[in-house]
Each structure stands twice: as C-alpha cells, then as structure tokens.
Image (cartoon, rainbow, N blue to C red; front, top):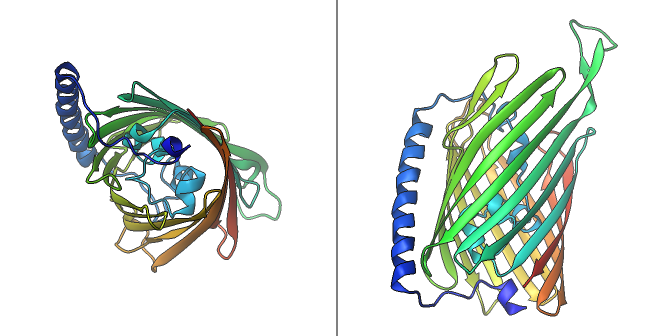
Length: 343
C-alpha cells in the first residue's frame, strides 16, 4: 500500500535512448508553453466579475477532487492523485497504478455539480486520464421581459466539461503534462461550445518537495449559436508542496493570477494521525488585487477529512469536504467523494 499512498520512485536508471527521447519531448513542450503563453497574453479578456461568475465555465472555479478542495485548492504541485489531472496534469506522473474518483457536491438553489475521473500510467513514463464535470443551475430559472410577480417562463442551464489529460515523466525530477478540454452549455434556447487547453510542469527538488507551474487556458474560447464569442482569461499558477514524513503531514502553497480575478493565494494542510484517517484544512483569498468587479477582501476557508480503507495493495478512500458558498453567503457547500487506488 505504501507504493500507492506515497510517490517514492524518485531515484532510478534509464537507457540512453529513453533519455534522449525525454530530452526531445522536454524541449518541444517548452516550445509549446512559450507559443501558447504568447497567444494567451495577446488574447482579449472576457467580461467577468471578481469571482468569475460571468466567465464561461465559471463552475470550474469550484474545483474538483476530495483531497484538493479540502486543502483550499492548493494543488499545482500535488502528485499521486487522479484529480491532479484537473489542477496540474503533470502531477499525474506520480501515479502508482489505476485510480478512479467520483465526487458529488450538494449545492443550494437547486444546483447540481458532479465530478468523475480516472487515470493510469504506462511503464512509469507516460500517464493519462479522463475527467468529466457536470453542472446544472436547475430548470426553474425565471425569465421576465419586465417587472412582474410571476415570470414569463422558466428555463434551465446545463453545462459539461470533458478533460483529456496526458503527462510525461522526463526524468526522476522533471514532469510535464497537458489537458485538452471540451466544454458545452445549454442555456435556455441557446447552445454553446468551447475548446481549450492547460499546460503543466513539475520539478521535484527532493523526494518530499515539489514545485509546480500551471498555465490554465492559454487560449480557450467559448462560442454560442447566437454569435456571441468569449475568450476565457488565462490563469498562471505557481505552487510548492512539501511532505514531512516524521509528522506524516503535507503543506501546499499556491499563487494564482488572472487578468479578471487578480491574485489568489491558496493554502492547504493535511495530517494523518492514523493510517486510516486524514485531516485536512486550508483556504484561499480573493479581491487582493483589482479585477473587473473589485470588492472587499474575501476569505474562503475549507476543511475536510478522509477515511482510508486498505485492501491489500489497493486502497479505497472516502472524502468529505466543507466549503463556503460564494453564491449564498453564510451557508456552506458539502462534498463527498469516493476514490479507488489499485496497483
């Protein structure tokens, strides 16, 4: 089970042929990052409020994964978890076998959010994953042409995102990865389609400390059949993750920046007092810098726990996460997730 819970394969050997192949891939991916970053920096910013409520696919700001959300979304340098495909696909290079996760979010006002993903690796060099995120604002949204007590009609809003993740372990220290994302939306009588990508990089300083870089949506567009088009603003994320083996604890710190949301720092902690229990806490801050909407400083604490059930060399994990509800101040969002990790 240790091989599944911990990413310990730091030292190893490789042939000259594989080393040269990895070096070529590494140089090619750096070129792609530079080109995509250039396009993203030149793109027009879509209209959005400070919390991302008007940017296409705003529900993706709620994150994914029982471990990552409970740790405040500080996951750019995270490894060895299927949900790393959402936060930084390069983190999939820490996988030790097949993993699958299903997460359900309990939302207010008739909303629904579901997340499902699986990931695996091939010969400890190539890693891949598929993620699916479904969001519904309900089918009782009221439409009015003017002020009235009763709505003229009711309509629904349904959105889905499909992520295909691919990661490469270039050597024991360097890993790179990328996401191809497809987004669809049905809003009243209008349909939308979006296509985008994410680019990720990780560097392992030591066996227990990792640095991460994520360029999210360097050029992601979303078009509607009423000729409305949007470009989702790129987000740059930097992170560090450190694991203390004596305390059996983790500390993750991220910094994210985008032109519409500004600077958002994130912090996450995990402590495992027993083999079968993980306690997690964290949070993130918004409105530190000016964005499209502005507003006072906003703090969003998070908390959660994980119950781990060893099954020989495999593991089943139940996660619970408590988040603050940004749409309904003073209330909370509850998430439950079930993850299987199999060698």
